[in-house]
Every structure is written in structure tokens, then in C-alpha cells.
Amino acid sequence: MTTKWTRAEWDHMCGGCGVQLRIGDPMQVQSITGVHRPRVRCPNCAEGAPPPDLPPLPARIVEYHGRTKRMKSVRAIAAGTDWKSKASGD
Image 1 (cartoon, rainbow, N blue to C red):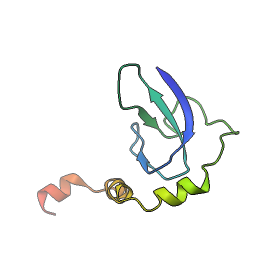
Image 2: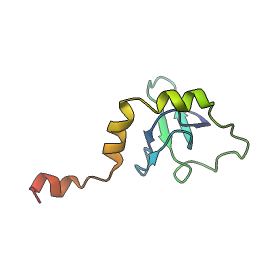
Image 3: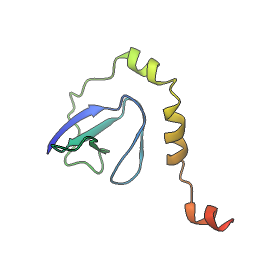
Image 4: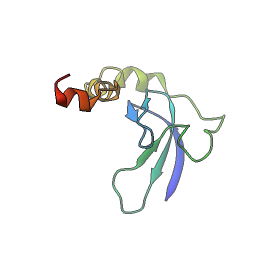
């Protein structure tokens, strides 16, 4: 398994605690050989702290991804919906 620190180019959810990672937030990406989708971890759930010299995202990436539809669905999921009360009709 390989791990690397990077900045989020679009909204993600941490695979450990479910916190929403916004564009530009530091995150650890864990790639497993033979597995297509990498695991994303926030600084609290990751192994170690992000490096202090992690470069910022270029402004063109922040501007471009700031308008995507995918971010709306991730924000809705990360809003903290209580699925049990929603299913029971409360």
C-alpha cells in the first residue's frame, strides 16, 4: 500500500470518520495495488500529520471545481442526515 499527502481537488468524505474534506484541505490518499479506488483519510484519521511544505492548489483548479454538480451531492451526504429518524418518519 502506498500513501501520499495531497490537497483535495474536489469535495471528499473521509473514509474513517466521515468528515467532509473541502477543496484545498490536506488529505492522505492510500492506494492499494490492484484496487481501483484509493482510500481517503482526513488529517485526524491518517497515519501521521500532513507535511508542513504541502503546496497549495493552483487557483485554476479551485475555480473550476467550485462549480461542479458533484460537490452538491457530497455536501448533502455530509450534512449529517439522521437516517434512522428519516426512515421512521419523525
